[in-house]
Amino acid sequence: QKEVEQNSGPLSVPEGAIASLNCTYSDRVSQSFFWYRQYSGKSPELIMSIYSNGDKEDGRFTAQLNKASQYVSLLIRDSQPSDSATYLCAFNFGNEKLTFGTGTRLTIIP
Amino acid sequence: ETGVTQTPRHLVMGMTNKKSLKCEQHLGHNAMYWYKQSAKKPLELMFVYNFKEQTENNSVPSRFSPECPNSSHLFLHLHTLQPEDSALYLCASSQQRATGELFFGEGSRLTVL
Image (cartoon, rainbow over all chains, first blue to last red; front, side, top):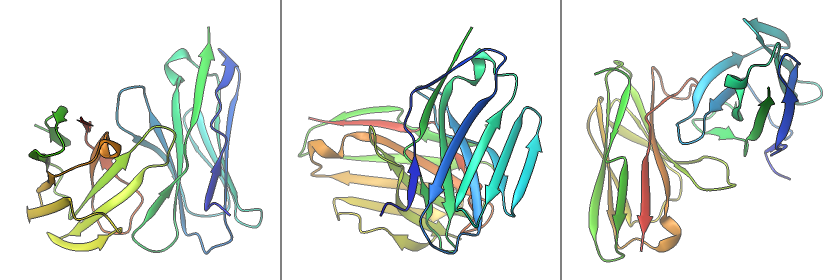
């Protein structure tokens, strides 16, 4: 079983709608969860971190963590064309290795 | 300069060449990392340095040789690479080791002929 499962997409969402991105992880003691955004030809950029169950909001972004079900989600409200990018989820299982998903390519359609 | 800078941005080398990638961080962080990013694969951690001491070698072939002379500089020395080593090599730094809050450089795109 893969440690991190992430739908590679592509995911297309109309401008102004809510984009929903999901990641599931294997049955390990996960402590920290992160979402990175990577524009084409650029490096990953941290946009959200979440450490406890529930929701964490930052502007138009909301991270949701459910440790019992072993998934983390990223919601992007009022999607903009500038949100078009690949979104990487990452988990820190308590060691030095930050484990990344393969990324979901998101396209916001004007 | 600010953030994490990597040079060169693009590199083409033959399998018998020796080259080096350089990374410098201006964030005052204590940990630095080398990651490899290949198409359709997750980011792969290669090496971790904490206070310029190597703390992680993720089973990386010896044709990749890291060097960390101080907490701000990180090198990746390359020799006798294979075509499958062609990838984007990303340097990152973090305030502390074992945190997921990484700051990445723009990467060095390596092509091995």
